[in-house]
Amino acid sequence: MRYFPSLLAMLATSTAFPVFALNSVLVGSGFETPVFLTAPMGDARLFVVEKSGRIKVLQNGTVSTYLDISASVGTSGERGLLGLAFDPGFASNGRFYVDYIDKTTHATVVASYTAPSAASNTADPGSGRTLLTVPQPAGRDNHKAGWIGFRYTDDPSLPAQLYIATGDGGSGNDPDRYAQSTSSNLGKILRITPTPQAINPYMIPADNPYVSGVGGNPEVWALGLRNPYRNSFDRLSGNLWISDVGQDTREEINFQAAEALGGANYGWRPREGTGDNPAVSDPAPAGAIDPIFDYAHGPIGESVIGGYVYRGTGEPGLDGAYFFGDFVSGKIFTLNGGLASGFTDRTAQLGTPFGKFQLTSFGQDGVGNLYALGLNGNIYQIAAVVPEPRSWAMLAGGLLLLTFGVRRQLASAPHAGTKLARADL
Image (tube, rainbow, N blue to C red; front, side, top):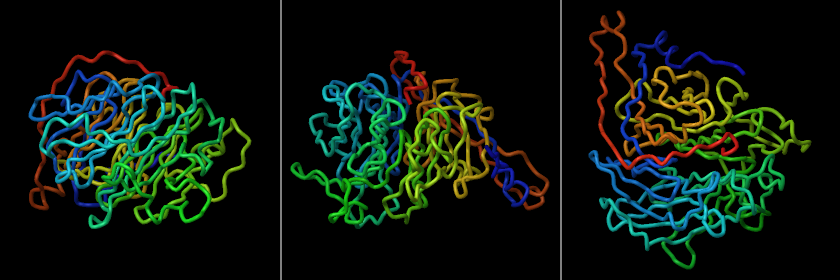
């Protein structure tokens, strides 16, 4: 694959900005298989999703259980509590959404819950209301995706739209070709408008691609995905980044501009990354969209973990960089978030926080700072360190040197110890 020069290195030679190195700051440990982290916009707390079915809230050095639905969650293989998204109106309605695999039916469930107030550190487990279920193939415990999210740049005067990522249902090479079938909700990005109603818990946005008699499930927004486990919206631009875990050859990151229409086909199973899937003979679907970035299995890794475009407050030298990593290698990388160029391996700078088969997810707090989570129960904040002085900077009249301190020292119960294989993603 092609390696691009670092965006930050280019900035250092072409613009009057300091080059920021990176480090990682341990902010929490002892979590039980943490698989996601998020927070409502502007909120100082961290909400950590544990695969077993619990959400922990971290605030001012204390840890408590925000929600426990473990009795309902199946956890074998890639099953579990996998996604969390706060309603854009959370400050007033206390509503949030989860994505999990049901312990009994093994179907994907997207449900809403409410907290007594936005400031409460516990949610009401009895407030659960199922919005959507997606049946899963029997006997397959992989490719369950699990990410859900809102695009916060959407017009706040309009109903909020929830995006839901589903895997192709498991096994290898999508044997039932669900990802290319518009009559299946597997292997897709779905898009719905949640409602507070019990009977009709969601509506279909009028501009979804398969509505008004057009063949296909009305929830489908995009198709042709294998296991889009971790995705994100750029909170400044609204662009959607979709990281799709590959089969045996390539890992890929797909991109959808904020203004793009639905119906994009990202090519799986006939396509894997920028090439044809060597394991099948299916022709590439017409109009299939290549990833904006992909890499062959090898030193970079074998199982992509998608991240975020950095939009935090503490590290201006990182603004616009897209962070992502790989589960198999444990490495962390950046791309230029605007062009998907400037590929840079950041692992050594960050102090190699995770070894092989450890990195599970990235997370973003209420002001846009980034975190990395691992199966070993540790959570690190990704931070910039003071840039080295440069003569041009000193002559320019004293740029401020930014320092970063630990903002949260968090602790929780001991990690139970869980190990996943490459096939788990």
